[in-house]
Amino acid sequence: MNEASKDSRARTLTEIQNPKFQNIDRVPVQELVEMMNQADAQVAIAVQASTKQISEAISAISASFQAGGRVIYVGAGTSGRIATLDASEILPTFGIANRVIALMAGGPSALVHPREGAEDNVEAAQTDLQEVGIQAADVVIGVASSGSTPFVQGAISYAKTQGALTVSISCVEGSEISQLADHSIEIAVGPELIAGSSRLKAGTAQKMVLNMISTITMIQAGKTYRNLMVDMVASNTKLRARAIWMVQEITGADQEVARAALEEHSWMTKNAVVGIYLGVGKQQAAEKLLAADGILARALGEIS
Figure 1 (tube, rainbow, N blue to C red):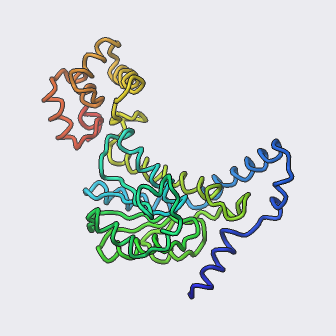
Figure 2 (figure 1 turned 180 degrees about the horizontal axis):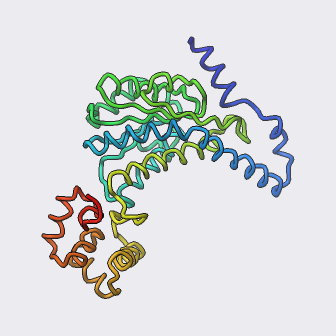
C-alpha cells in the first residue's frame, strides 16, 4: 500500500466526520454532555466485540511475563501518553519495577511538550528498543489508534527481528500494525465527536484494553490475593491504612496486631499476612513466599 493510499485510508477510518456531530459548535452544553456520554457508551460495546482477540493476546503476554520477560508499550501522541499512564501504575499498584515500561515517540518530554512529528521516525523506534535492551523474552505492545503510525510499525517490526512477542492495539480493522503483530487487537469505535481527535473514544478504548492487559497479567502472576492488591507499595498514609485493613481482612487480626506485623515486615502486606497466619518471623515469611513464587494463596497452603 503506497503512502497516499495509507493516508486516505486512515482519514476514512479514524478521521471522518460523523454528520450527527457536525454542528457541535452551536449546541448547548447539556446537549453536548449527553452527546459525548452516548458516544462513550459505544466504546464498551466495541471492546466487548473484541474480547476473543484481547483474551488470546493476554494469555500470550502472561506466559512471557511469568517466564521473566518484560512488557514494553510503544506509542506516539495520545496513544503513547495513555500507554505511559498505564505502565506508570504498575509499580505502586503491584510492586513490580522495570518490567512494564513505555516508550513514547519523542522521548519522555513529549508527554507534556507535544512532539507529534516524532511519530514518523521509524528509526527512533529501533533505537529506543535497543536502548532498553530488548530481548526475545519480552513483549512489545504497539498502540496506535489509526494503526498506521510509522514509529509503532517500526517498533513492532524490529521487535520481531529480535524474537520478541508482538501485540498491536488499534481502532481500525485490518490496520498496518495488525498485519505486522503476532496478536492484533482492533477496537472499531467509529468517528469521533471532534473529527480525528483520537483522545476521545479511541483513547478510552485503548485505556480500557491496556487496563485489561496489565491487570489480568498481574493477576495471573499472583500479584493479587482474591481481589486485594496485596503487592501494592504502601508509600503514604492512605495506602498504609489500606494495608492494615487488608491484613485484618485476610487474617482476622485486630488493627494493632496488623499494624505491628506490617511494621515488622517493612510494610509488605503479603509478608505480614504470612507472618501472622503461620506464626513465623520476617525471614521465614520471606522464605515461605519465595518458595511459593510470591503467590500468597500458595504460601498459605490454600492452593498447590
